[in-house]
Image 1 (tube, rainbow, N blue to C red):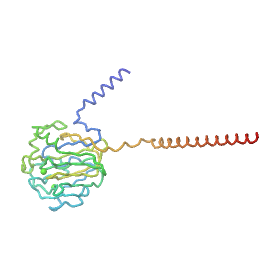
Image 2: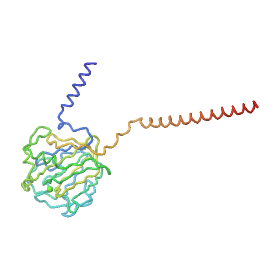
Image 3: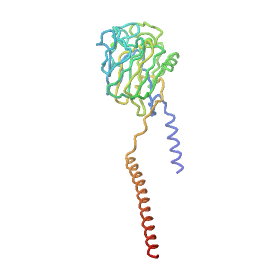
Image 4: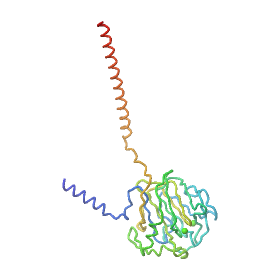
Length: 291
Ligand SMILES: [Ca+2]
Ligand SMILES: [Ca+2]
């Protein structure tokens, strides 16, 4: 008994001692990681859908893209100092130089883009180029917001000299600043963002907002994904509007039994009332016969 208690305590302590960056949280929410410097595509390969915006002409974003339906104020632009990846959406290798490509960004007047996904997702990745502090990523499931990510924690992380990855390698934060194609926009962050839905969370709508939100190689997966050893933990965002836990098997039968019990009680009540009526009738008859 005592040994078991000690063993349980030890196990609990070991579990608590596990570094949070190495194991994705089991809580309902979204875990944010950034890829290694110069990475412009996703490392996810299962259940994946991506959009690189390379087939679109410059101008308003097409309504239909390969991950869903676009509404709001979205613009496609030719490669510029602010964006346009040189690596494709499913290429996770750090890439510098190259010719760049078309990319998307928020536009006036609303500076808000909504993407309704073709199917619910548990992962979102995007190359966030010339990152601006005002940029916000919101994830929704139906009408309910699941998570909202501002850039505050990320920007603070990048003010340090170095950042450590899940698997150990340390990166200079300088390598996250400036366009990896040609070093343009040297003070602005360029990085691949990974949002992992955890604890059963999923989303079917993405809202990107804020001025100058440039992005490319957007990727979603309908399967739960985990960070690679090369990625850097940014923050965990506790989820909003967690759906109630699904009823366990047999719970429905229990509810049915309760209804039956309640009905049974009513029937007994009715039966009791009937007995009382018969008894009163019998007493009345006896009185009559006594007269
Ligand atoms: Ca592109
Ligand atoms: Ca920007």
